[in-house]
Length: 230
Image 1 (tube, rainbow, N blue to C red):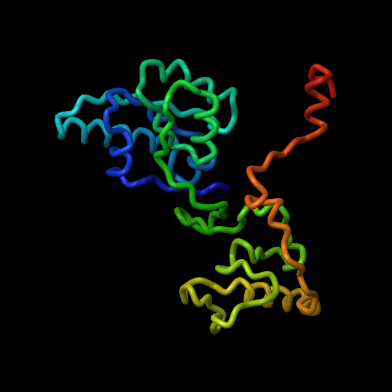
Image 2: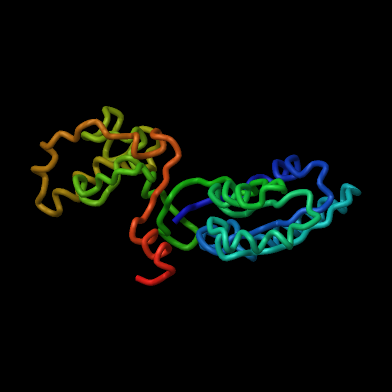
């Protein structure tokens, strides 16, 4: 899932400078799960903004709303009426939510309240760890399910760098070396012979380096054309 964290309050207030009425908008999916931008976090941030404004003698009306997804037009449209008369929407969705809300709600500013970090897995309560970089061409079949793009600090495709020591990354001794993990996994499965295979240079054009990506499902388009009939 997408993992995010709230921006510092001072940074958020700087972006809201001059605003007298704002709508704090949460998202009910990923950022709710990672406890960064769900209904509870919307309430906390809204209360902080009201309190700080009162302490500073500023006029600020703060409204609250949480929709199911900020990456889906039918839900984003629900914010339109609630945002009427607001100077800005303060989005507690991920970066996708901010971008898409801006696209749908063209006449009102949409500002980010979160920093979007990575695609991660939940390791323990309140702990998430990066597992995917969304590179557009998954290669983990060759590395037995461990992604060197996301989990190696240098995104190396053919083994570890010279800085790996005792199974740890040179970036931080607390960070496991992804290629040590790959080696251990292959040894466990009896597939160490795969390490002799050379991985060719990656086609980065399928990821972010190829420009903003768009995915289209031909079967979905066919259903829409036929009026919803499969």
